[in-house]
Image (cartoon, rainbow, N blue to C red; front, side, top):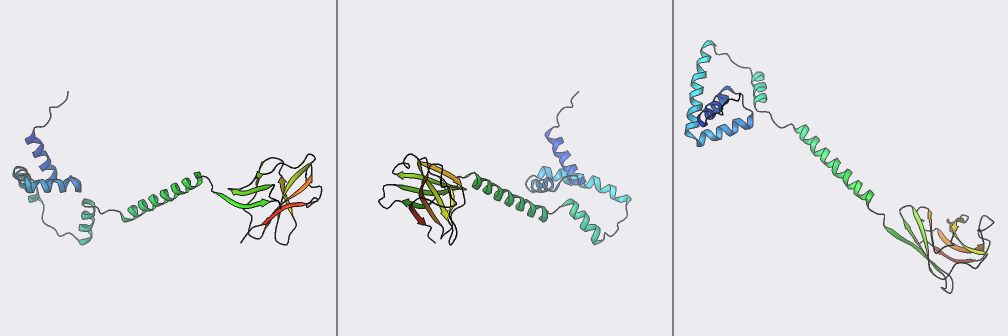
Length: 214
């Protein structure tokens, strides 16, 4: 069986009693005190409860309260914001923002960077070399593949070092996992027998080359 709802007068009386008894939280107490200034009937209800509950004090003698106890009571009734918790919240929010930004950057496609344009002396054959992410990409822009029985081979040459083969340019587009070539390194294309150079370096004529600018 449910009890009938409180009337408006009963609600006012109950709230006044809770305020005087000190069982409301700080926000509720602040709302009650604001209402007391604007609502004379509610203020009278609070004063009535203060008078009734004041009779309970007759059984207790007054006693001084130490500063330490008063501070503890005040802290319990009116807690201050936890600066450390607030700082940790801000820190956590900053970390989350950084993490989100990093995730967005990781999802963004890596930019395409032009590395070199390799062209034969008569410009009949031209290769565009680009880098994206961890891949070196070579695209034949002009000309055709090497004649039957031969193949174009791509080389990279460090300053003062030996040529290293990066692969065969049998197709119009070629990709190989390789870091961005550093300034001073040279890219070259040679004509080799089908299957690639049988030696550690180019064995046929070097058709084109380009040294990466600083």
